Image (tube, rainbow, N blue to C red):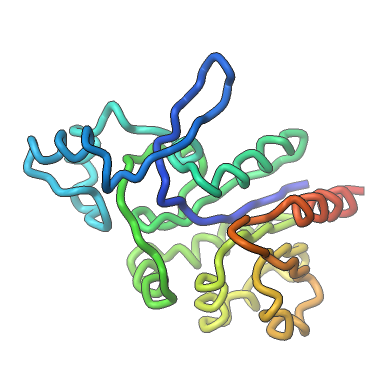
Length: 219
């Protein structure tokens, strides 16, 4: 059985890697990081944002800060990473929507950057630049279960382009979002909507519910 999880980036990055505990600590706001800002200023570079055309140069300057995407993001992303890691007995893949890169696999090596996706307009621009919505569809083709942990503005945008109708109807789609979207999916029986509460991308209750769904599909 194949499970695929999609979530978004975090504004908090570069969590401390605690090798002796095999864990990650708290991250930082790259826009306020004095070391990174000074290093970039020495090389006449601004903070990395959407200027992907300068990626090679940034990788040279920030080589000591390069990391796999799964260890670049902190904050509420931690909840999703831990969820995925605790289900290691399943064939489960994690993908992250990044304001700089578009869709990232968790093991892709990236630089720390500043990004601010806060509206459906921002998401539309990102999709035109990176084609992330089509790339997600490609990643879900052979998935038995697709878990979507994205904020309201992403769901709103995907609804405007009728994206959900393109998902594999044979897959079980678990969508954690606002309950106000429930009517939008009433005619899609393969989509199970779980209510997102507060800032949690999943929440403890939904976490257990998702595990139950995975186990039931796996029977």
